[in-house]
Image (cartoon, rainbow, N blue to C red; front, side, top):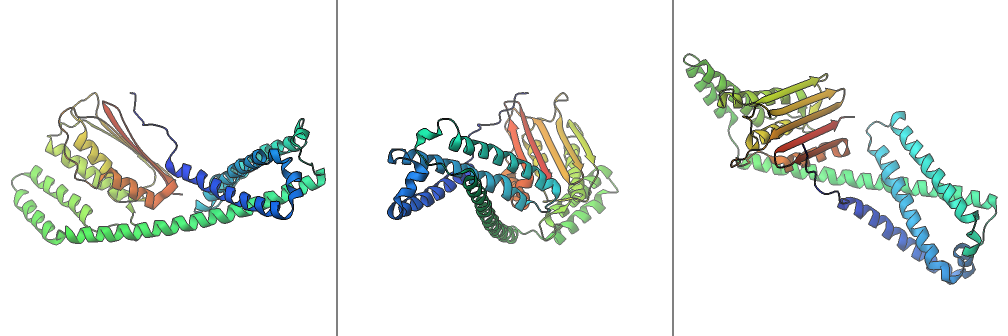
Length: 360
């Protein structure tokens, strides 16, 4: 099955990161250059060679330092800071990356300073001792600056995250007030219907009982202060929804459900998994026995993987009235950030949704 995954252009956030570092270092270099030019012009000849080479050498240093700071901030320090538990397993890969990067960079710098053809640049070369001392000192300063910037970025991101969560919670409360249904009244009515029907039609009574459980889960506040519920509760709700849909269509829906779970005590945002399943019910062709709705869930330790694949309807699709995929993406981002990956893929025949959550 050939899936259409969209274009692979560089995301805007990465462009913004590069541009921010490039602009900051360009401004800093320009300021230092102006100060040196006005006070110690001979230092420019030592560092950048003849006047005709100044622009080229300065541009080289700006681009080089932009790459260095981007690597240190976004590849080394931020991933470590964003990890909830900093362990040796977390730090070791980053330390290896840092050593490899420093080795390549030092080799390049050494060759550029002392290698063949370097004399043609017109720059005055320091002695080996002075060169090593300044390279080591500048490296430490870069590490310190990168760490400070990474901490600042993470603190700012957490503040924004907190404001978004508070805003989302407020909007949810306002929506609940606006569209409030009295659960007590609803469940009393369903109880009454169940009591009346159980003597005459057990299938209808079972359907009413399932509907009562589904509505109870959707309406009652089962999530904790962090907005998550036990996976076991979400799984029960999903199975109830699947069962009542099978009853609606006389058990003719073609559904293949596979689960491999060794930890039902992990917590996830409520109604996330069921949204993906309901999406398949609404827009999928579930009557083809050769292409059933495929639902898979696997939990190993603290890692959850959820997958749905369905054949797309050729007829007119049902209108979507759930919380929607956009809402799912937003909630997952707020709760997990970089510790989750959610993607949807489709072609003319099939639709796939895949979610991975790492709770560590």
